Amino acid sequence: MLIRQLFYSQSSTYSYLLADQGQAVLIDPVRDQLDDYLTLLRELELQLLMAIDSHTHADHITALGLLRERTGCATGFGEPNLASCASFTFHDGQELRFGQRTLTAWYTPGHTDDSYCFVLAPEGQEPACLFSGDTLLIRGTGRTDFQNGDAHAQWASLQCLLSLPDSTLVYPAHDYKGWTCSSIGEERRHNPRLQVADADEYAQLMANLKLAEPQLMNIAVPANRACGKI
Ligand code: FE
Image 1 (cartoon, helix red, strand yellow):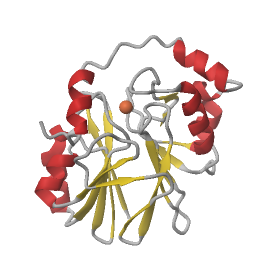
Image 2 (cartoon, rainbow, N blue to C red):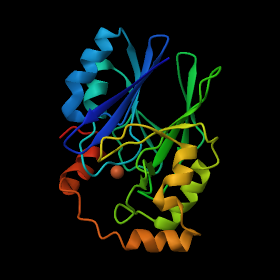
Image 3 (cartoon, rainbow, N blue to C red):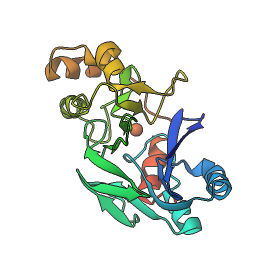
């Protein structure tokens, strides 16, 4: 089993290459990094089975469309994503298989209404891995103020993620300080957004963030609905 975390500095985005027995999955690939992915797949002699996005990104353009064109991989978004260009849509609880491993899609709305996390089931002594999209970040959570974001829905989604064992490794879709990985136990105890009493208090905290709009939003969202092919 191989897990590679790839960083795109312009939007502090992490993409993940997972592979088992020569079969690979890419989570949240960035169009500007296409050549890196193709090189890595070739060097590691991996067949890319699928490329999937955790949600419609507002801060970078997806590589899904170009990866499908170049490698013949399947491309997937989660329901109710509006992209009609993907080769499949996945839903809550859907199992995505590669090699002998299984990635399960968890519908976790809140950051957007099409936000998903992916849980890689553990094997042997390894802990499970959670690819947490923009739902759970390291010591933070994804903003909920656009793209049908909903802080109450996100609170409920976060409670689902906290049902995972403390040992579960957390790999987010972004980190703005260079942190790379955490665990459910660590976030449960130390993530300031998870120390509030209930959904209403969480919604109030999120409403008070007053964040600037992502610079690329008006370009990235329509481009990503076209699988990044503009
Ligand atoms: Fe996002």
